[in-house]
Length: 461
Image (cartoon, rainbow, N blue to C red):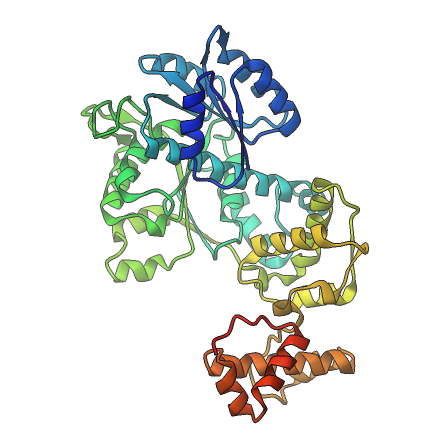
């Protein structure tokens, strides 16, 4: 991610740069001219913009940024007492604001929230273009029967205000389904606000959701609106809801039932009109039984439940997805689109992808970046995919025999040797000496064979 800090005070820029804890490149600008140049050349994903730049007005840059087709997120930095100006900036499209002097943890939280939204929006946009064209049904993620059932549920409930619980493993696209529900709803013209319940410290969660009044706690130097207010008349997506503390769960339930909130440190009830979509990869039913999740909140969130299938249950979508990703990353990294050979695609089709679509996406990007031949072949794939066998039964199973018969003799022998050695090494806690003794070979012979097969030598002696 690329971040641009625009502030005419060198010490302020230095302090913000040192405080940021997200991965990426950070650029600095002291003037609007320098900021415009960096925006044009580097196209930052996030801009931290001070509105008071000596004799220049940061509003000018904000207006220019919002006019761009792919505008970066903008966090406004303003002097204490100018909160009304910052709120006006948010109405013009800014993501959030901070008043100087600000709390370090608050800056990090806001930047982290912005970074998460930027990443999710990129993934969403990446998946849209070609997949939508392939299916002819809008913002979709595939054409298999498994994912079509998800689309059917979206069609039935998108135009309602019903509360939705999305279940599925990490990387299956829960965020994309939530966005599609919002896009097709009457609330589509309003905000879609995301809260990652697993990423926010427990002591900041209540303030993040409901906002706080000035002086509510140490570091609360200004009033702040929470995610519920930011999502007014729109959709609030509570991601990783299973990681939310029980104490916060009670307050969420109250907000849902009373349709109102109170800021931390405040006494006034604030009416909120939001649609709640939540998601988790955890077993909430079991958590309810274990006393880790409130039963009343569970039933309040689970008015409609959508189970999003893992990629291994819709393998027929893999050719569509990998083809899209090859074109996407070839364009992004200014490369020719490499061809995926049938043998390599067959290997992808049999692999279970525990990281789901996200894992496939990252794999294809790596293959495209490293490719120099114009073809992605079976040998280019990672060992875990090249030598993966789906069956776990006896050696004489038809599935295992079929897997080996699809290879030439050299590849089949190599595949067996790798599978055998990895199994034996695991049995002996990756200790080379004990493994060699167990399988009846010299330690040096085992090391030589591991070197020939390209096995990683991160093993104990």
